[in-house]
Structure formats: structure tokens, C-alpha cells
Length: 502
Image (cartoon, rainbow, N blue to C red; front, side):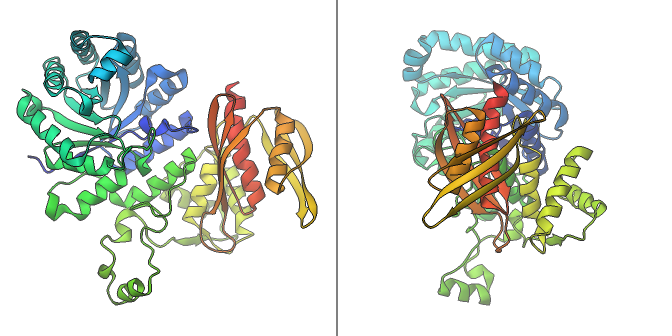
């Protein structure tokens, strides 16, 4: 058995499915370029048949990102497969990923097919994909609830039809680790040709077992793991890339398996995905959470002072969590600023650079030193905000004990300026209501949170929220040293997604 475990990242496909996440082309490309710097083996860039926007995003990633395999998802139907190929055909290393359900509950109640029909659809889909592309992945959806003998038959048909990768998904996160490990082991023993292709797994986290199931599969012979940054994904999410990678890295002596991941890029990748999706990382999240390498207990801190290995099983630098470099101040010029952005991996056009530089200078007037985290937050807020139908010009608020909070907000759209005033339960509520009066959309605020990007008193505040507008959920984020401004930026970020689409 080879030591190598391939990392298949599906952040841009499965990771985009939670409510409120809707990445535009620029955002998907930026994440894909960072995943390439992370050196993942495969990027699943999207599901091209679902919308023209997703098709364009997948096509752009395929055209511009080099290094990883670029794959697109397709149901086992001709139009899906053809559309997927059209999107990825310019990739340096293209792959078509097709799937069909194989559990009786899915076959009968969702597909309304018979087992024989699904077998024929599997063969036809893989052969059609193979006609476009030599690298074809096949997934039997809901494999863990499928009849074992029938699952073996479907997988064998897929391999005979030309599949180069077989992916076994625990689609609803139902399996226990020993059950899933046994399934992988039994499939390898029972299916002809399975040892000649890449055997992949895709585990969901409904019972909190996605990482455990994926590792058990690796121990039993799987050599590709499908995962997402920060564990994003439908419902409770997917196996977290950073956890899979660092378990294999930290416990190599026990597991004997390695990845090709550049682990020093893990933290930056996590932050970028969090910024652009609007989904914060929980403080106690393994590997990338704010508290992952923090120690406060007296016993722990005493041990850490004597020898870090007493309570630290990983070196923070190993995941790119070096102490923030305090690098720039208000006297820093354009040349130094541009060079530092390039060192961080950002390439901005002249207009984007000037906007980012202006935000940096404003921030540098308010805090003595600007960190890399500050810069990443500004870039995510200023550059990857999507199309801004409405832009915040200025605002004022008045509030205090015994005073009804009031806000006046001025917005611009296509050169026209709008200003409205409203009252509310607090200054943020009043500001949001003033925006609602201007734009005329009925919104329901589902969630709202404010945090600090860094720890000092002068830190940028980061606002994250989710809105329900009609039947659609959208997320928004904004940053500023003023938390009211950060909140307004987040609110407009979410509203503009709906306004622009309309």
C-alpha cells in the first residue's frame, strides 16, 4: 500500500452549499489559487449545470489555476456531463466527477428508478465522461446505506466503463468508524479492479464522525480523502481538511501515511475561506481555531514555560500560525505596501490596489502597527465584495441612556445619492432600518455577530450576519475599526448580492 494520501478539496462545491454562502467568480478564483498554494491534489471547482454563474466560475478556475487536478461534478445524465466537460476542458489536468445514488431508499424514492436502470445509467455516464476526459471519478451516492452486493456490482461496472477514481461517500454521515473501515476493506477484497484505481472517500459530519470515518477508511486502504477547509459543507459539513492533514502529519509513526500538503499555508487558507464565505471559525476549532494553541490554565502555562512539548503536540509554525508580523505603519509607502501584498500572495490591479492602500492608510492613522491579519481582512472586505449596487458613503448615529437610538445613512448607487433616517432598538438596528427604507427590501436578520480581527484595543472589528430575503438566505461581512460601520458594510454586502442578481 502506497504511503501517499491524495487530498481532494471540495470547498468550492460542497463547501458552498450551506445557507447564505454564495461565492462569486472572483472569490472562487481567489480560494482556488490559495488551494493551489496549499498544494491540494484535486480542486472540485463546482457543479456547472446548476447555474450560469457556477459554470463561469468553474471555467475560470480551470483556465487560470495550475497544479492541482480541476474537477467538476455532474449527475449521471448526458447534459450534466457535457456541461461539466465544457467548463473544465481548458484545465491543465481535467477530471469529470459523476455520481448516482445506489441505496434503495434513494433509488426508489428520489430517482424513482430500478436497480437495473441505475446500473445502465452508471455505465452510460462513465463511458460518456471517458469520451471527453481520460480521468473520470465515479461516486455511488449514499453508499453506506446501500446493499453491499449491489454496491459492489455498481462499482465494478464503473471501473469496467473506464473510471479512474472510485469515491465511496457517507452521504448522510450515518456510518460509525468501524463500519466504514470494514466497508472499505470489504470493497477492496470483493470488487475486481478496485486495487488498480484511486479509492476515495467523502464523509459528512452529521454525527460528528467525518474525520474519524475518513481516517478509518485510510487505515483500511483508501488513498484519497475528500474534504473542505474549516469543515464547511451541507448540513453539519464535511471532513475538515486541516484536521485530516495534521492528524496524518502529527501521527505519521502510527499511521504511516503522508499528504503533499504545504501545511504552512493551512491557517491562511482557513482565514481566507472564512472571510469570503462569511462563516466564522469557532474559537475551539481544532488546528485553526483562535484557541487551538492558546494556554490559560496555570498548570498548562507552567509546563509550557518549562518545555512547550508538555502541552503542545504540534508546532504552531507548522500550520502557518507564526506570531503575526507587525509590519506596516502610517509612514509606509506604496512600493513597500505593494511588495508586502505580493509576499502575502495577493496580486491586485491598479484600481484595487489604490482602494486597498487607501483603507490601509485610514487604518494606520488609527493604530500604530498593521498586521497581516488586518491586511487580509481589508482585502477581503474591499476587493472580494462582489458587485456593489449600493455603496456606503457616510452615516451618523445618536444613542445613549434614555435616548431612542437614531441613525442617518447615506448610500450611493450609480452616482445617485440616497439618505434616510430611522430609529431602532439600538444604533445597529436603527442603521439597518435606515438602509431598508432606502433599498425597499423586506429582510429578516437570522444571525449577527461582531468580533475583533486581532487582539489589541485598536483592532479592526469584523461583523458577520445572515439575512433571509424572500426565500433566499445570504451572508454578509464587513470590517472597520468602527463596529457600526463594520455592521453596515456587512448588511450592504448581503443586500447587494440580492439586488445585483435582480
